[in-house]
Structures are given as C-alpha cells and as structure tokens.
Length: 483
Image (cartoon, rainbow, N blue to C red):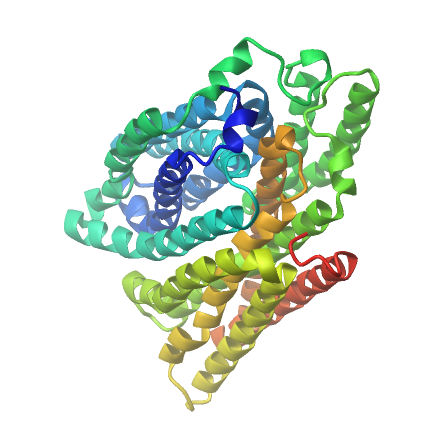
C-alpha cells in the first residue's frame, strides 16, 4: 500500500502513530528543559568551564538546526518511518553516552549527536501528521502534540531537580540523560509495532509528485543550506567568542543567496530541488513561517529571564524557579487541546487570540516585578501572570503549524516542516542572545527588576510584529477560516 492510499484510509492506526510521535516529543523536550537545570552540577561534577558549559547547549542547538530541512526532505523521498527510527535510536544512544561522559569534551560530542538524532526525527513527526491526518482531525492531532509540549517542558525542570537531588551534585546530572534510555527504547518498540510500512515501496517505485521519479537529495543545495544556517546561528550561540565570529553573519547571508540561486537553477534543469521555493508563494505557508519565527525570537527568552531573575536576582533555588512556570505549562496543555479542536472553524483567529494572551502575560509579569521592587507585591504573583504565556503557547504554536502546512503538497511535508522548525531554531538562538544581552547591559547600570522589565518590553515589541503578520494573513484569507 502506498503512502497516498493509506492517508485517506480511516485505519485507526493513525492514532497509534501519533502516540509514538508524542512519546518521542515528550522525551526530547523533557531532556532539553532538564539540561538547563543540570548545568551548575555539570560544572561541579566534571569540572567544565563556562565555555564548555555553553557548548552543552550550543552544540545540540547547532546540529539540530543545521540538519532539519535536509532530514525532512530525505523523509519525503525515502520514507519518514525509517529516518524517524534512526533519529530516535541515535538520540537514545547519545543520551546514554552523555550520562557516562567522563569529561566535558565527551559530553559535548554526545550532545551534538543528540542534536543530530533530534534533527532526523523532528521533521518526520511533522510530516507524518501531515500524511496521516486531514482537515479538522489534523488540527486535533497538532493540538495533542502541543499539549505534550506543555507537559514535557513543565516536567523537565522538576524531573531534573529531583534527579539531581536524589543522585547528588557529582552524579545526579547524569540521570537527567539516563532517563531518556527507557523512554527511547519504549518509543523504538512502539514505532516498529505501530508505524505502517508503506515507505518500503519508495525504494521500488517513483515518489508521487516528483519529476520522472528523480529521488536525489539535491546534495549541493543541502550543503549550501546547512552552511548558511550554521553561519547565521553560530555567532549567537558562541557568545564568548572573539569578535571575528560575527563575520559569519554576512557570509551566511551570501551563502543563502547562493542557495536560492542554486535551488531555482536545479528546478529549471528538470530536477526536484531540496526545497521548492514556490512554497513561499503559498501565503499561508509564508505568513505562518514568518509568524512562528518571530514568536520564537521573542517568547523563548521569557523563561530564561524568569530563571535569571528568580535565581540570581532574588536568590531562589532552581526548583523554586521551575515551579513558577508550572501553572503556565498546565494551561499550555489545556489550551493546545482546545485550540486543536477549534482551529478548523476559527482558523487564524485562534493564533491571534494567543498572541494577545502573550502580550497580556508579558505586560502583567513586568508589572509584578516592578511592583515587587517597590515593595508592593510578591514575586509569586508571577505564577498567575505567566499563566497567560501558557495559554499563548497552546494557542499559537500547534494551531499555527496546522494552518501553515494546510496547503503544502504532501511531497514537501517533511522539508516544509523542517523549514518551519529551522526558523524556530534560528529565532530562538538569536532571541535569547540578543534579549539576554540587553538585560545584562541594563543590569550593569541598574537593578534586576529594571533589567527584567527592559527584556520583557523588547519581547512585547517582537510579539506585536508577529501579531501584525497574523492580521495580514487573516485579511488575505478572509472568508475562509481554515485556510
């Protein structure tokens, strides 16, 4: 049975497929959020320097971001199932290696390998939801996906704190990696049992929608895009490096232009490019990709600033800092489920409502910190005000993903999902670097409360730009709530 035949089948196995995908999503996001809590004990446990600690995060981010589009396109061509399995296996094995790492170099190499595993599996997950779900059902599937995001992000810091407390400062951080092993093995077993295997036919017949059955990965385009993403992300991740690293930005822009030229030329020659740039003529895809990139540019810095403010500004523990975001994460899961059911009828209005909720949460949280500095409020009011950020998370990310990919041809489901996620990764890297630099710059001449408010004010401006993109898309799609 081919992929195209199976996608219209009402076979209930599609929900089992979704179950496998959310197990892997839970594992990867829980791991990312727990590592943030573990950094101080990693420094103590294996004597890592500040630069080496930075690469525990940056190495993962770089290998994850660079490989997304290429891996997505490979899944479109050769089948998403096998690449998903390989990605989960690599992530699980690398997690065990990280837990056993005797020194910072081994840890950073294993973290880079974990990023490769995630880059292989993440776009396949998006592609499989595109492949096996349609219409309102797809929105519900993305809603479930989004609710798992909220749960895993909230559990990660708490799980990390508990494991470190139980294992001690010298060894507790290792269990934040070892915990991935049973989850990853469970995911592999379920994937083998539950994911259908129509992708086997891809090795014997032309891929639907490609030119003359050509199935190459466009290796030149793959290398060029990977280099461009690497050059753009590197200066923002290697913040302790020498000034020359910023030369990578114009180099990255030049490589990106060269990639665009190559992709157009490749298609003109009758070949199937890695990314068909005509996808960006689909306004729902272009607007949604820009919107989510802007959203991640701003909002991912919120929790970094909250953790810094609570721990360095007020002297709270990592566990107390993590608890501040717990109501937000719970509401994120609830909002994602509601948004998944509603996006088919309300369309972009769900995302717009989520962006307004984010603005409310940002403004109210800044007000709490300001009032706390005047002795008029407690920082624990952040439990309530940051809850608006949780609602935003659930109402923006998954619904926007469903809307953005609604008109994308199935042949590009993986690569288009990779493009979206690459934009998110770049937005995250740039946003955290710029906004934390702004906060520390203000802190050098003022207090933590002023630095916090300044950072949140910058995030509000970015979210307002994203809101403008959402309204533009709504106007362009007026009269059709789904598209």
